[in-house]
Image (cartoon, rainbow, N blue to C red; front, side, top):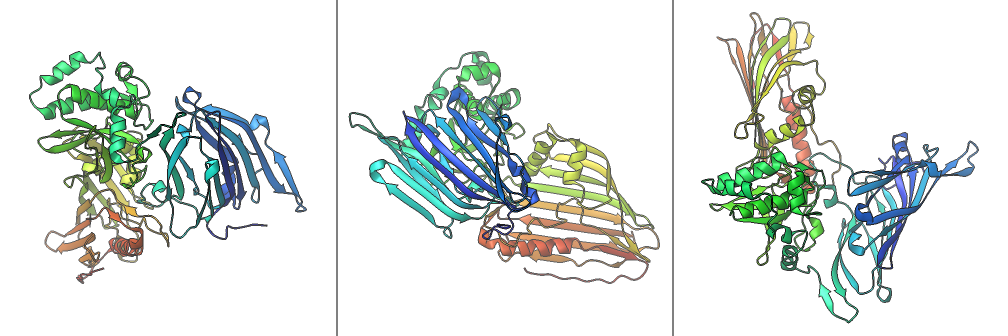
Length: 618
């Protein structure tokens, strides 16, 4: 009896088989899929609640012939099978585009094998996008058998680790290709991870050619220039930008009267991001006319941003559509002109040789900041001629957080103080995004409290939420008790910088570390001591530096005998946003050492001062 996955020991469940056979039936794409999952640990029991999403807008895809089984052993180790009852199959609409079939598998327990199968019918091969060999649990066998519609040619791109073997078999006279991969470890979430799909073992498809019945061949997007040209004449993309939507004439007239192009851009952008509601759907296209989007004041990402581009063009600005892949969606492989590498379109406006990238769904992002999900990513500038790949970058914006603390400590070891936190650029946007869906108590727990602490934070005031040219200011009082041993108190001076524990704990990492942008954190604290209490030992003044200066940390601590004040200054900087996976051991060791140093306590006692100083190169 299988009790663990021999190629992924940490797994609590394993996919024994994920198999699909996809064939053309009356120009439809019909896929028969079968999945078997072994439950290894109690933590995987929720795998018995299965969700199968499908695209049902205009009934493009339907799921049917759904069956399920659970294979168990009785107390005598005799196998038996429980069939999934039809009453345990549910259909639920997720939104106007997607629905899901939910299966509640019966009698799932440790040792169970869950098996289910279904058929999918799509109205066309436009629904063929990718096959994933890898999921969040390991897979023993992943098998995909695809037969292409006659006269249709697909290009495909394989994304896989060089350490894994992919068996590919092509049967030319049948228009058939078979892919199989075995013993694939799980793809798990890791801190500061790029998009999971950047590392997922998968094969991606795109139509490359169609041959009509009279033998005429039509090619699709074989080059980036082809892709750009086709998008400009696409009814759901380029044609939408060119149309006068109607209904906005008065607004356009008012904007045209503004004195500068920057004011025109900002006025249009602010209208879209603040008055239009995004329905949560990422898209590059408009599924309805932009006039409807204008009237409803809502739409998917494609509709909102194509409307933004349309209006910016109407008021006379130099604007172009740019296809982008948000960081969570994955990197763009510049070798392949596949439009499905991109999940959104944004506006690029050029004013006085400066480029502004505007996303109407990024409600908190001002026009002079590239959205965090897009900074330092690759985009595709769409034009009838001279379409091109571009990098969305701005070295003037980063993650910045500055903390000022004034505090006193009592003779019984209680530290009380007032703190001011000033968050700039992307740190400001991150906190505003969190505040949009959480209250201030949750904000304190996430950004201010230590993971294990009896710290009390009160009187939190957050200023400048609506002042986009000012830092997000957080003012609060805090109280924390410090442990004692005899006449000694140990005081934690590593406050409000989020570096109380290292995020890098895995022994092995297969993915890059991506911080998004450069980052700076500075914490300055003044602690006033009571009479009769002096520092026994001041922690070392220290500089910790990565070999290439990509990450640095410094701590300076001084004690003024006359004023009885200790001053602490801690500064950390990340000068390189991305580290390759092979650099992980170095980054992990650096963070471990840095956090250990920062967590060194200040020891207070009556007596003389012992002073140390050191500098280390990591």
